Every structure is written in structure tokens, then in C-alpha cells.
Image (cartoon, rainbow, N blue to C red; front, side, top):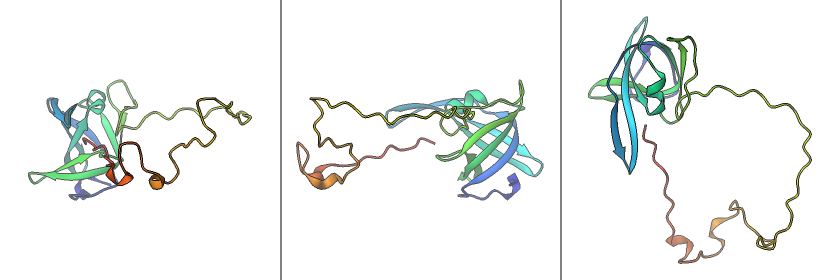
Length: 165
């Protein structure tokens, strides 16, 4: 896909471009967590777009690098398109200072690890323990079978962690 083809709220975007500009890093605190954000301007033969970089991504990207975003998300802020890896995307450094490199961290593609050598592992049986009853639950059974200590199951609240990107 080319930069000229990007549309607001577009998902699953694969784009390559050269970093031509980097903004200053801004630090923030959201929901009690600290983070960093910076914007890069990337271009291809068809146009330019702002790329939002979060936390570890910032340290990996330099002006002059060629980057590849896979499964990215296109947002819009004050009428301007902004590309980000979002929750599910990755950012690879294709080439730049020092040649090809892999950037790691949330939203950044990690270098694939070599496949482990095949081993024939015998299934291990866990020894019986006096502090672990035979009817021990690993939590994958039905949750609402019995009230939990301190209240009924309907009194509990599930809280999902929010993504900062």
C-alpha cells in the first residue's frame, strides 16, 4: 500500500517509507503509567504521513531509516492523518544507519528466534503435594460455580487494561 492510499480509521495497513523528520520526545502519564511519544514524518514516492512512535519504538527509529509498518492503524488528529502500529501492528527498520535492524518492544516486530531442535520430551507428572488438593482448579473452569470469599460472583468486577497507543 502507498501513503497516498491511506484513509482515516483504516486498519490492517502495510506501508513502507523513509523517515525524513523526527519531533522531540514528549513524556506523559496516563492512568498512573509513564510513557513517551514522538512523531516521525515518513515518505514514499506518493506522499508523506505522520508516524506516531511510542516508548521503545522512539529509540530505534532515526532520520534516514526506511521503516515498514505492518497491520498498522490510520487515525486522524486535527484533520491530519497519523499512522501508528496500534495494538496489533509491528514496526520494522528495513535499512538505515548501520544497515537493517530489528526494533523490539510492544508494537515493534521482534527478531524471530531460531526454531528449537526437536526433542522427544516425556510428559512429566507433577508429584502430589500436601498443600495442593486433588480438586485444584487452574481457573479455566466456569467462574460462577461458587461464591468467592468476600461476596457473590456478581459482586466482582473485571477490569481490562487499556492500551496507551
